[in-house]
Image (cartoon, rainbow, N blue to C red):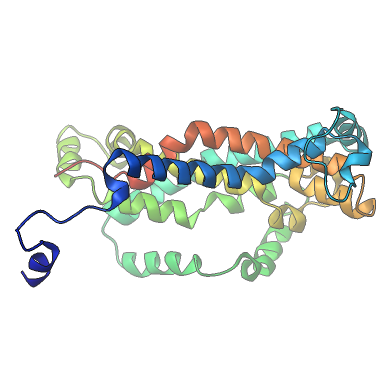
Length: 294
């Protein structure tokens, strides 16, 4: 009660809302701030794209030339002539697609088990899963490398796909989401003779598609940009993913050609930015989605 009385003015009027929550001026100021923040975040991507189409002389200019006098695609010609970069991009697409689809499937099944099935040690196992989120990737590197080596999967796309099928963050997000779905729907499906897989397919997945989409977007962005695991498992040029191929270009040739590296960065960054622009609403809906009301 005391807090409520403090929030009201002496005349008993409703408390004032922040200036950005209402009023034309507040909305304009908030919108302007958000637009400026978005522009600042996109500036590095725009600079990479401009450098990739700039002449070689402008790429080394100090101070840098923000707006080149004429555009050229020479950097892209160098990129695709010095590297099998098309094959590297296809490798990235293959690995990302397989991991996104496979990890989403595994996450749905595991999240359903943790949210709906009763078995001994369930909470302990889930706690251990969450503890894995606190460990850096480097801690897992040695044991995972040994396992991959003894399975004879080194230097293959399978070494990048199979270990990545278990995404702890995806399992956690979907498990929390499944718990918001009323169990009455499960009971109704069981009365119709549905088993666990049928409940997942016809009840859980349709009601959880925004959350599943968010998990797939987060996983895809992580795998597309991943450098650590490909660098650990892949050692031949034609089987490298695109980020690892760009690193090999810089390392083997002593830091150049810089134009080809800019072109490769543009090829990697621009699709991700475009995908985020079109999928950001789905991502926000999936993160904030809380199932259906009881």
